Image (tube, rainbow, N blue to C red; front, side, top):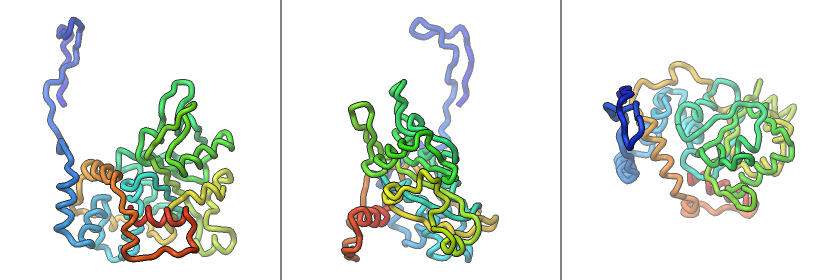
Length: 284
């Protein structure tokens, strides 16, 4: 955009000195979901997975990217397309856990480890303004071992939101679609950690709450994801991320939770929360 400053310019009886002289679009002005879906049909499943990985900047043809490891990276994108989905990834440093939520989507926000408040996440009672959970599609907590709530009982509000997808504002319930992602670093080998402690050991004491853990839909095994190396980055084309993330946001309105019933029966050993977690993961 080219702007010019003209102090003498007036509009509606007021001085309006800033004038837009020229506006040139650098991205396409509209996103058509039907067009995107139709283009998908011309590619095989594996080709499409490779397009998605290249969109995130990774090169899927690298021999280290087995089919399973490709799915690990794509699981990080599920929160972009599946509403009210809660994910946790605990693994070594340098595997790209934070990058997806910091560098890919403008609809996601990454909160670094440290004290956080209900006013920052949900609503500021003084002003009545809706905060991050009501404004973003994805709220990701980085370095989750350091995340603390000033009032320990406030974590109950987070648990309620992860379960119901809404939070209280005075006497009314405010619905929201933002999902919660927890990222944490594990030092050393996963196998050794399991022998001496447990897999969720990086969580802060406040967050080692079974009710909160039970509301997570997927645990991404970060210990199985390779640390990022220069040769993993692609020099091929993917989809422009501004375009892709806009379409992913549109896909949040569609659910495929019943697709699993065509192929599988879920056993009676799964409780209702487990069934919901499996269905939402498959849908994503």
